[in-house]
Image (cartoon, rainbow, N blue to C red; front, top):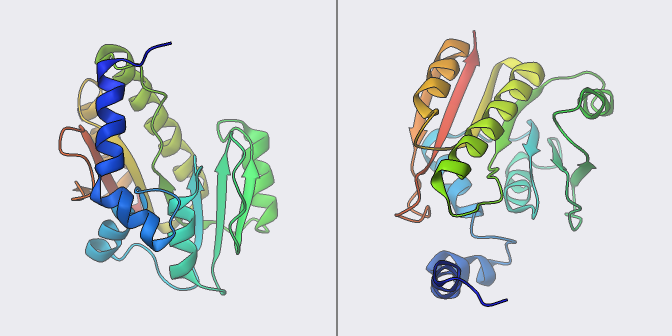
Length: 205
């Protein structure tokens, strides 16, 4: 099946992308790691010894980076529906995080301790039709937000990828009503034409 013009353009850009090349040079699984790295430099969300949950973690770039920062006294649990190649020091749970059984397994695995940080760099499988993709992305962010409220410590941090468009402002209002601080970051490593932006939320109300 022939590729569309947009997918050909994406592939061409991807292979020429400075952050893709940088990720390969440094041995990371994806260019997305540099988005988390930029957020870390600005907001210091990751600290040694933290318990971290990475939702929709595959292929694992964010888990890989988080694990380096939290160190051996910390703990990173990566969760995804898809299988993921193992990362030394990172625990992987394969399952649907919207199901209570999966959350129960998570909490049992950490002896009911809550997480200091919940990360979500998730995006739906994109069709290229904004009217279809935007509601899906907002719904995914809402699901991640719901999990974060259930498993975070009272002073925990939630970092979530959002896409600006229909439903964005309503979700921001929900975030602001649940967290004392909500900041937005657009990392340099985000593609300029992308509507993605990251909410950095801290202090559950």
